[in-house]
Image (cartoon, rainbow, N blue to C red; front, side):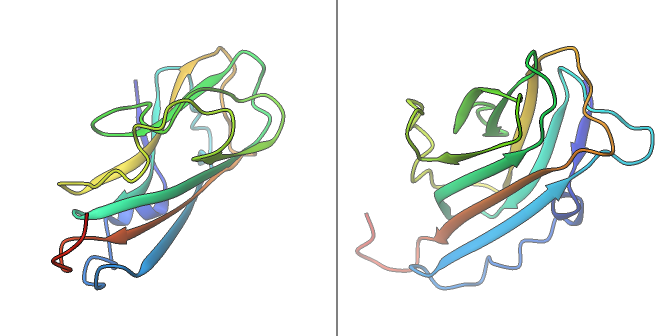
Length: 151
């Protein structure tokens, strides 16, 4: 099991942490294995760093046609499939959370108590993701904790 990181996750920078509550923020990241590196079943890709006190509003992933046999979960350090479970990586596609077809709503409006990352875990499959393939992710969130009447 290897942990791969997008440039956003590698930087570890979360420049949004000082933004006042109630303002919607967005972050995006992309990941392609570099050189001869491949991503295989059991590997995790850390995509987007999320700061403490962020409330997740939405998430989207865009992925290439890796293979019919490959599945992935989308979650974070506390729950690897918090947002999406068993996403079939066949056929280039975009998936949204929350969105139709996803019963896993536990992550909707999740407030992070510590810094974390939004991750993609390749949990099934025999086909490796290679350097000609790119996964993209977009998240929107807002910071909480500075307005006294927030729920």
